[in-house]
Length: 122
Image 1 (spheres, rainbow, N blue to C red):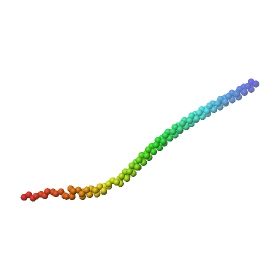
Image 2: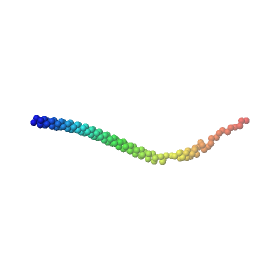
Image 3: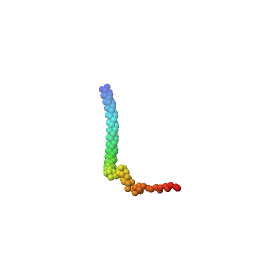
Image 4: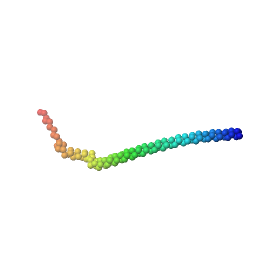
C-alpha cells in the first residue's frame, strides 16, 4: 500500500506541476492581453486626438478660405467699378487732339512774334 501511496503522490505532484505550468502560461497570456489592450487604448486615444486636431485645422482652413473668397469678391467688384470708370477717362489721342486745339486757339502762337528789324548802319 505504501507503494500505491507513493504512486499517488507522484501523480499528484505531476498534476500540481502541470497545473502550475498552465497557471504560469495563462498569467503570461493575460499580461500580453493587457499590454495589447493598453496599446489599443493609446492608439485609439491618439487617433481621436488627431481627428480632433484635423477637424479644428479643417475648420480654420474653411474660415480662411471664406475670408479669401470674400476678399476676392470685393476685389472683383472694385475692378468692375474701375473698369466702368476707365471708359470715362481721356485717351492719349484725345489729349493730343485737345492740345492741338489749344495750340490753334492760343493767341500768342497765332501772331508770330515780330523781331526787330536790324537797321543798316550808315
